[in-house]
Amino acid sequence: MHLWREGDRSEAICSACERRVTTTFQLRPYMLRESGIEVPEVLVAVCDVCDRIVAIPAQSTPMPRKVC
Ligand SMILES: [Zn+2]
Image (cartoon, rainbow, N blue to C red; front, side):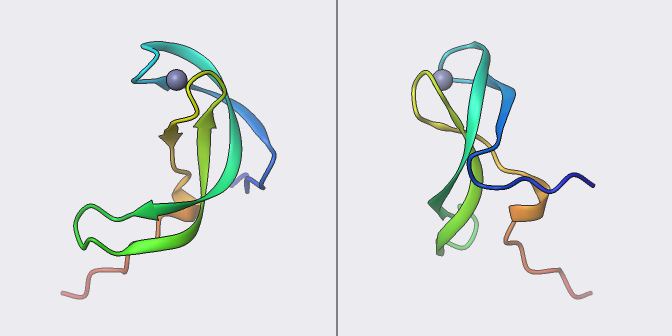
């Protein structure tokens, strides 16, 4: 699996721009919708055009594993 680092460049579909855009990986605070917990530093892909978070790599997903 490719591990992304801060400053890496990629491409993604931005839902705000409604087109394919270039992105830059940055460390940003990120609010988990389900739990309401804010994670202070999550590696995310940020749209170069509108500066919104467009993708979160699986490696960054701070989800606790569900215990059945
Ligand atoms: Zn955008």
